[in-house]
Image 1 (cartoon, rainbow, N blue to C red):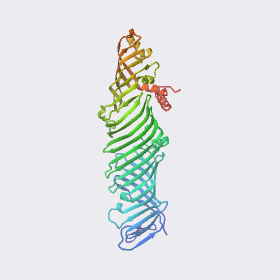
Image 2 (spheres, rainbow, N blue to C red; image 1 turned 120 degrees about the horizontal axis):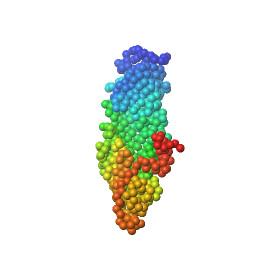
Image 3 (spheres, one colour; image 1 turned 30 degrees about the vertical axis):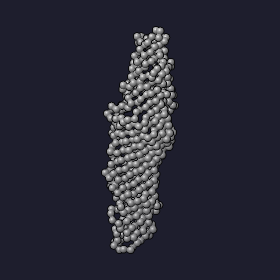
Image 4 (cartoon, rainbow, N blue to C red; image 1 turned 135 degrees about the vertical axis):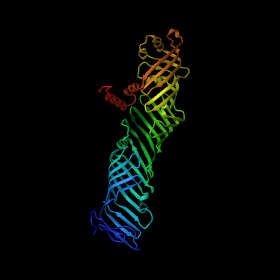
Length: 506
């Protein structure tokens, strides 16, 4: 009769061990043509710790119900329901950021293990697994993951040296992904991950899984398909590649609303360098207060992991609609290393009338079209513009600025009275402006105007040189509070201002 519980194996004959009613083959027998079968048994035993290929498995114990058939070459073990392997810790220590799975419970019900002790080679080449498995981890720890419960359900097939495991992984927060895990004889492992993130609920599950998810990023619509492959070599070196397919994604990042984001992003990590490829990216609208629409972008970006903003941008296509005109970045390679690189944004056919209309002040109006170039710098300190230029397209146009607004901008300088009078109805033939913008958000305009006011001094020609400054963050905040972006942005800005004490709660 089979016995129950944990037992100490004892030798009962050449090549056999007896363990709680089950015969275990210990080494090849000299007697040919023998065979035996045990229909069912119950075994409990401590398993040795394993350290191989950067992996450490410690504190394992088996409580299994196997049936065994064996002959002179092969032993086959079929595990009945309630066959479990319990593991205290499983850790991958070969990477810079270790992964630890605590209190693992592996269910081997309906799984078959085959020992080919008649063959040559290491045991990892001679032990095979085939069957359904379920693994529950009470806590998974990694610097990029929020600690929580995970479970995996799937199928394992192959020799231990090149075992393949396929199934579905799920986190306690609700994030799910299909996994395809392949071990290789040299001790490395490759993992293919495929996940569909659908709408607000799917994004919330992802946000509750990743440590680095931005607090000010919310997604309200659309979906994304994530495909990723991660592999480790024998020495623990990590390589990764993947892609994200975005479809009509909409939401809010910080104070900017985005809608209709579609396209593909491919990325890879190799030799401590990240390479990202953007393919056919389109955005319906990006709105931080003044909308940018019909965005099209394709290009590549590569940078070291330690300096993500000091890389190389290769633009293949980059253009958008802005104030009835266009913004465009010429196709080229731009080196952003050292913070000195600049991305030239070309401005064409921008409507001065639309620009005046979006400015949060009454009485401003104008006509004409603008063009120019704005060299954009991006660094860890923020966005900068140096020596940009904007000018009016022939034949010019008209400007009308209210006297009180102008007087406030000019600081009440009475000597500038002629400027105030002229700009009440100024017909310009020349409008040139230099543009500078610093990391603190101060925009400086050096404006030169040539033209006349028909109502001033008989319409004599007038040349005006005016320096203006604008606090762009304050301007955008005013636009956001006015509801020109959307209600979600307005609520977020009000909350941020209330928390900072800059605005009292209603």
